[in-house]
Amino acid sequence: MRRVLVQAADFSYADEMQTIQQACPQAGAITSFVGLVRDQVGEARLSQMVIEHYPGMTEKALHAIVEQANVRWPLLGVTLIHRTGVLPANAQIVLVMTASLHRQAAFDACAFIMDYLKTEAPFWKKEIGEFGEHWVEARASDETAKQQWNQPQ
Image (cartoon, rainbow, N blue to C red; front, side):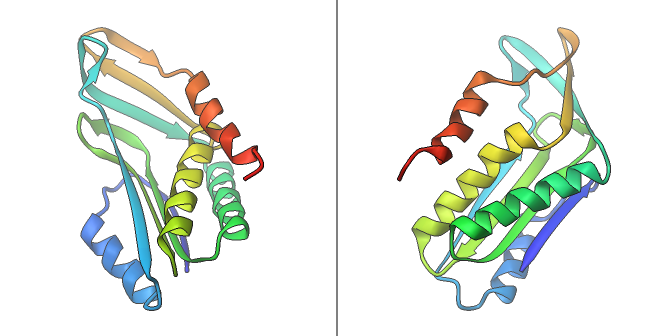
């Protein structure tokens, strides 16, 4: 099972967990990550985030990331949902769920997908708050996190 969705609508963690459990009954582990809109940037309050993407290109990039994870680890299932549009502070942005026979593969694949998503997926984020508004720039720490996966294990 591989589900990759880019959508404006919110998602239900409970519903997504039920879906992956039903699709992967032999799983011994399901790992998940939910990313949220922070309510602060430094000392200033953030009111919302605008997330834009390039339709078609974004989905293709996300599918490629999920495929890389499936090649590296024995995954039974993956769910990747990323929201777009105007999201208020504390809203859910992204969900990654990975199912495997064993926990380490599920943990590693989930982290890998997030590290690659942060650097390889064509999303643009604008933060809006007390400070005005600004586009979020790429972080060196995200690139460093991605590079760990290229090191010999």
